[in-house]
Amino acid sequence: MKVKDVVEDTPDDPGNPDLNPGEVVQIGDDGDNTLRGSDENEMFSGGAGNDVILAGGGNDRLNGTDKFSRGVGEIDNLNGEAGRDVFLLGDQDGSFYVGGEFADFAIIRDFSSGEDRFVLSGSSSDYRVADGSNGNAFILTQNGNDAVANVLNQSAADLNLDSQDFIYV
Ligand SMILES: [Ca+2]
Ligand SMILES: [Ca+2]
Ligand SMILES: [Ca+2]
Image (cartoon, rainbow, N blue to C red; front, top):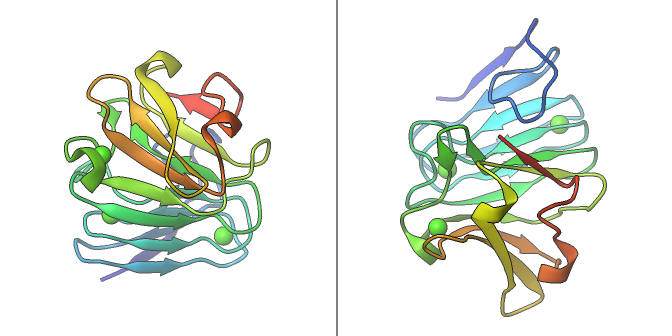
């Protein structure tokens, strides 16, 4: 089951797990879902399972998991596509995709510095970046070296955890 709804009245805050005015919401179930967006501004939540999100145009917020399953054991594919997109990798309760080390993380296909942003839990000192094997970069927890995201077409030097590309909640 996929749920689609329109949010009417909440704060406009990309780091907020709640919803923003005018956002269309797409929510996956516990299986492996493909959520395909339109040119509207959307909020995607893949939930449990290994999900693919194709956000389409518009300024979208992409969460491959949710506050319940938290990305544990999941590998989600997040595609922001056109527009200024936000990739949610954690919330105020902690980082997503932690527990399975390199068996759980979000794959970010089209991050563009200065345009798109990441949301991470905590502060920049909780994370580090490292180069992957083929022209990609990992965002890892400082504590436990647990992969949170694999950012394609970026090197570790391209990702500045203290820049405005990163929002901490
Ligand atoms: Ca969209
Ligand atoms: Ca998922
Ligand atoms: Ca992990």
